[in-house]
Image (cartoon, rainbow, N blue to C red; front, side):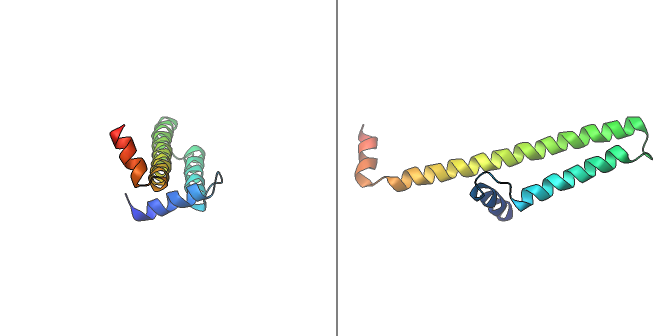
Length: 97
């Protein structure tokens, strides 16, 4: 995983429900591109619809990827917290049980 993206994901997680600046930048950029595609009258209608469809699919893929990265960070944090709470006897006990 790209370390820069990991830091962005951490900032997003740390923001506790608020959107981080980097995520807002991605969303704003996508909105601007979508607006340009919708408003460009120089592109024939059928091609513009195709471009918008492709663009929306790519935006959805980006959003799903971001969700996956956030889930991965939350899972890693939960695992680390659980492991930190264990001591040697609890680990041995869980292995023997």
